[in-house]
Structure formats: structure tokens, C-alpha cells
Image (cartoon, rainbow, N blue to C red):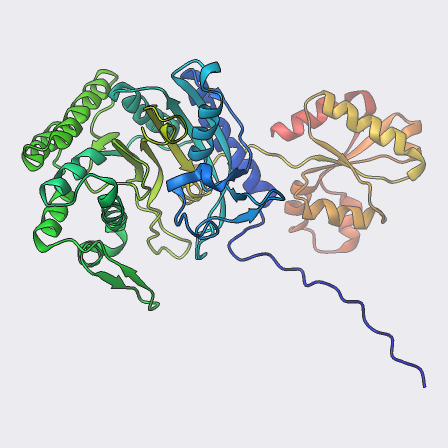
Length: 494
């Protein structure tokens, strides 16, 4: 009795949760956004940098969600020398390591820009991925509010460069020192011992737009259980402290000057709080000098940024326009970029203060917002499609395609198998507009046939029979071989 032949053990084709495959259209659109931002950064005198995707876990330091468990919040592994390495969580911590490692060789302030994938080992959800692309600009070794004001200006200019109009976005600025001063006045020390409590306060406020005042109040107190049953431990502030923090989040007024006046009353005698107010005054002065008014950049005390390494001014870019999905329902995009001052990050390596400030935006999030606003410009065209009517003429087909490319046109020679009918079906799936056909007869006459597939599809709607189709040969032209490039350009320009 013969044994049954065992089926081969094939792995199931499946994509890891929280990661995405990107189509050509998305990749091209993201590249255009990055190129637009890079042009702004470059024009302002910044230089490009590329750092590796992996960093040693101890180099990430306090930026790690949990230092005792390197694989919590980040993706980590042990190298062959038993050192923990982690996929970068953002582009800022690797920058700090790079500057510390090359400190003496760099002109300071060191101004760099970079784009690349970052990785978060967190629970994925709708629009929340474990890998996404960030685009950053930073000034390291730049003390004072001038560098922070420049970052706010960069953020506003990038929004214009990628296609947003004034009135569709606003850069909202705050200062971590203000909240530190208020917390000092309520008994939370500005020391390492109080750092964890302050970080919980920051992360609670950062959820204000999503959870509302009641949700944030719970997180400032004992904690909160969400709809899924997950419980988040709170900051355990007292009632007076909670009241003071919530009062701080609504201190923003109609304009930057009025907001500063409100904040000066709130911070009282706190030296750190008064320093934060003065920095906002300096930022307002520079923004006003270059014509950036409250409509493009405002002071907003609800903006705190959830990351623990910020030490001074912080800001986020918010969309002001209503966005709806395809069914007309409102869509919440939230912050599409942000940044701030982080004076302690490089000092971890060198034991000396190295001031720094930066701006970052998530490329996918910004792309999604632009797409919903119909603000994306599609500049990619499908290639001119050179069919293979006779395989003996492959050299001629590739010669034609090479001439098209030299003239600046995208061109593709069909390298698959199948007759003209199959090739046309392939071209249709690729969204091809123009197809070039040449056989031995056309070659002998020094001619080619060009089919406008898009126009032909429209004309075909009015043709009722196969005989009529064959006799009409819609949207098909015979072109002299020497005139092919000019004809293609004219047809594409139409």
C-alpha cells in the first residue's frame, strides 16, 4: 500500500500586525512630502544626516519607556556581545548619540535634517502603526529662544510647502518650564524624585483632546480605566494640584500677548515659571518680526508633548479645517507634527549642558490629512507602453524605449509572456495611456502605431458591435518613426 504524498509545508503569507505595505502611489506621495520639507530645511542652512535604524539600548537612556525591560515600548535584541540593541524609537535620540560621538568635529550649532522609519513596540490600532516615517530638523548647541522660534517658523513654512493653505493649520506653542513652575508651587519637586510624577502629568495633559477634562482629571489623580478594561495608573496629585494643572491648560487667550499676561499671573514667584514666560515673550517678538501672526502660530497651554525629554518650549502643528471621510463623517487627525527644546539629551553622554531644539512630523499622518483635504498633487504618470508584437524585434523595442527615456518620458517594454491581447490587459491594469505597437510591416515602412488606451476606452462606450470596433479602430494613429517622440509628448500633454 503506497503512502500518501505529503504536502509541502508552506508558510502562510501574512503581514505582522501594526506594519503596512505601501503602494507605489503612497511611496511617491510620501517622497514628495519629504522632498518639500527637505527643500525648506536646506534653504534655512540645515544639512542632511542618516543614522542607523538600531541603537544601543543604553544610548536611548531615559527615553526608553522602561529601562529595566528594554523590549517594552521598543523592539530590542541582544547582540552577539550580549549588549542590548533597540530599533530607534524616533530620530532625536540617535541624533543626540551622533553629536556626542562626533562633538569636537562638528560646527555648533549643528543643524541637521533627516527622514526615516521609526519603530514603536506598542499595541497597534486604526491609523496607529508600529513602523512609520518621521521627518525631522534639529539645532544642537543652540541656546536661547531664537533657535526655538526658528523651529516654529520652519514648521509653519513646511506646512505651506507641502500644500496646506494659511488658515488650514496652526503651530501651537507652550513651554514645559511653565508647568514645572506650577507643579513646584503645588508640591511636586523639580527633581529626579519628582520626574516620574511630572511625566505622568505631562502624558495626562497630552490626552486632553482625546479624553476631555474628566478623563485627564482622573489621570492626574488615582488613575483611569478605559473602555477595553485597561487601567492606567494616575499621577496621584492632590485636589489643589489637579485644579491648578487644569487651570493651566485653559490659560490660553485670544492672542500670544494676552496669553503671556495670563501665564505671568499663574506662575507666581516660581523662577522656572518666570523663565518660561520670558522665553515665550522672545519667541513672540521674532515671530512678529517675520510676519507670522496668531493665525499661523499661537500660544496654547494645553500643548505639552508626551515625551519626557523636553525641557523648554514645545509646540504642535494642528489642522484647523474640518476633515470628513468618504461617507461625510468627521475625522479626527490630531497633531500632524511637533517638537521642542531638549537640553538634557546630549548631556547624558558628555556630562555637560548641550542645548538643542527640533521639529518633527509623521509623514503618513500628514499625507492622510492632505489626501482628505484634496491637497495632494499627483505628478506621477504611467509609462508609455511598448508592446512586443514580434520577439525578433526586441532590440528595436528597447531602442525605442531608450529614446523615450532620453527625451524625459517614462517608458516600459513588456518583458512578460503573452499575445497582444494579454499585453493590453496588462497595460490597462497599469493605467497606461499610450501603447506603441510595431511589427515587421511597420518596421519596413519606418512607422509605428500608437494607441491611446484612455481615449479608446471612452470612445468604445459609443460603439455597439465588434465589427464597428474593428472598422473604427478608435484612438489609434500611425506615426512616422522619426516623429514618434514629438507625437508622444503632444499626446501626453493633452
